Amino acid sequence: MTFSPPSSRARDPLPWLLAITAAFFALALHRLAIPSKPMFDEIHYLPAARRLIDLTRRFNPEHPLLAKEMISLGMRAFGDVPFGWRFPSAVLGTIGLFAAARAVWWASGSRAATLLFAVLLASDFVWFILSRIAMLDMTMLAMMACAFWQWALAWRKGSRLHLILCGLFMGLSLGAKWNGAPLLVAPGLLFAWDRWQALGRGERGRVLIARGAGPVPGVSLIEAGVWLGLWPVVVYLATFAPAFFYQVQPMTLRGLIPWQGYMLQLQDSVVKPHTYMSRWWQWVLDIRPIWFLYENIDGAQRGVLMLGNPFTMLAGLPALALCAWDGLKGDRLRRGVALLYALALVFWATNGKPVQFYYHYALASMFLVAALALVLARWWETGRRWPVRASVGLALVLFVGFYPILSAAALPRANSYVDWMWLRSWR
Image 1 (cartoon, rainbow, N blue to C red):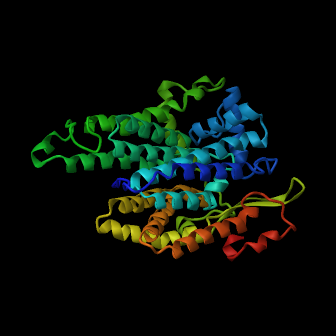
Image 2: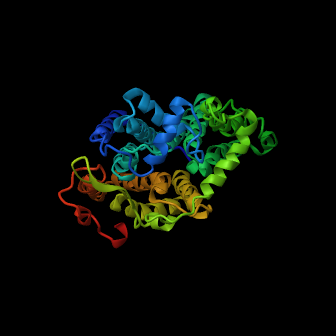
């Protein structure tokens, strides 16, 4: 991935980003306590968070602890009530939105791409829904977004500190959920490649110890391997600290590494078919969502449909192809976005987990949105502005139109869902 320097005429869009993320946070908080009972996988993660408060015994052992620790913090702050369960996801969703947009700014140097990305990600349905439910995914996504923000800053500023922070957030992302594991190799591999390219032919024999070249002068490849390879693993293992204090079957140092294999076995053991299970290619085409909620609750019929914004998810596909094409012609930023999308998706396309759901597409879709923002930004910057306005307008109109079944709003009748079911497979 290449990090293009901001144009001397480009102003940092920080004030606008703060406004967008503040608006997103306010919207995420609206009606956050509805439904007043657990929905979808909250039934697994809420008991696990309670065990982390009282430290009695293991629960939901197939996943790492960090995201459940975040849920438990919300319970401690606001009580074991729906608002307390979901508040950490709303905070992390807002932080992740800001961090991802800052990553785009420092990587692209494009004010237009940054603002377009922020608006499109905030309105892509997926990010909003996962910011309003007590699941593991938003912790993983927010930490990954922070890692990419620090990655871009490390390359931009040649900073060891940001390199260390990149490794920290990568480890925290893995400590929430394993979905981003394939992406964790990218910063280290890029550092090695850029260092190799920066050294002259006569210096490449010293590639492991040379310090006087980019991307972070003063940091050798060996040291970078520590911050981007070893350090994230240490951080990840540290997220298991509460498990050492369980009253029943506490974790031990000797058992910590074997426990990782046991977690993998547990995840692969989920084979019972589910009504809304789907495959990766259905996520790409946006044709197989999942209902997190649809029932009469809290005085009205309500629903939460985990679906991607139809415009953003489908328009992002040709944008992704354009980025891949430009990447083949030498644009490393666009090539990097396309490769990161593929890495995030291949995790699900090739692993053996038989039961998968649309929300597993969340990480890959972040890079899809980035590809769309980069393409639209180029049009905007070259004067072709009406397609950009139309694209953003359509994405926002669809967000507003689907908002009732994204946010558990009161619906007028029991079968109100049919008003949004454009495809039979959406039911």
